[in-house]
Amino acid sequence: MSRLPPAIFLMGPTASGKTDLAVTLHDRLPVEVISVDSALVYRDMDIGTAKPGAVTLAACPHRLIDLLPPTGRYSAGRFRSDALAAMAEIAARGKVPLLVGGTMLYFRALKQGLDALPQADADLRRLLDARAAREGWPALHAELARLDPPTAARLRPTDAQRIQRALEVCLTCGEPMSGLLGKGGTELPYNLTEIALLPEDRGWLHLRIEQRFDQMLAAGFLDEVRGLRERYPGLDPDLPSMRSVGYRQAWAYLAGETDFDTFRDRAIAATRQLAKRQITWLRAWQGAVRLDPAREDIRGRVLDAAREALDRPADRGRS
Image (cartoon, rainbow, N blue to C red; front, top):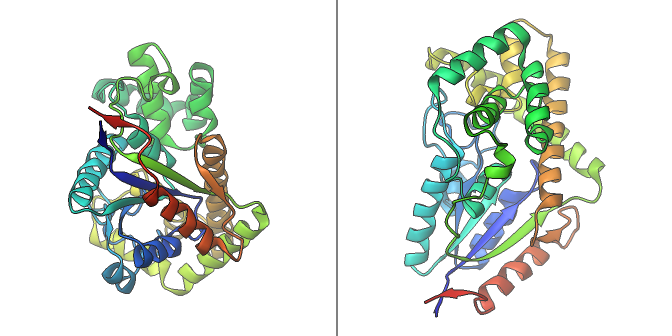
């Protein structure tokens, strides 16, 4: 039996302090960071995604950020492939992969696999798009709720990309996506430790979300979105990048569809809803060490959990 190399998941809702904690771990332990964030993969989307700044990235490099332009598309399957390659390279040098982020579908794809899901069906997607144009995405979300209640429960009624994919899987396979995830996937070949940041006081997180969004505005978030619209002619509000929280609302404001106060309120509300969905995922996540990020001693607690993961012997192996 050979020891499996260690790896650490640091999972948490938006604005819970994941980046600062990752930097702390990087400074104290032999870890290297891999981002698990579906928005950080896009180049030139820095302010609205709370992407780590140049100084932070110089001191603590993050893999899997700035991979493609905002006109591109990324997927859980591609993430799993990219993450496994990065993890293998880090482990081969004797370091420990530290996967940090809040895109819980990506964490699950990495841990459980996505091999059982069918390939995209262009014809079916066109039919679903046409139905959405006639009936609206909330109507298709209601259909998904009948076919796959667990998947529908974690999606917004306006989350076009994910509703479309979930319906595509249901209609292609004849069974729900929630029943297929993890089937046929290969076991993650690491001795895994999972840390979940779960704030006990939701008000603490809501305040941080509001304060951070105002900091984004002061840092030039709206100018960033204006620049994206000018720099990428093919960019439109239906692309996955522009459906990210904050960007969708900024696009509507710059298009003259809302006033500034409405834009700000909607962006903050959407971010809080994102955090609520992330917390729902985390509460259901099995096997994670749960820590409250609002505690004053959170850095020490996360360090202790990570050190324990690195010090303990592997509990499983391969022949």
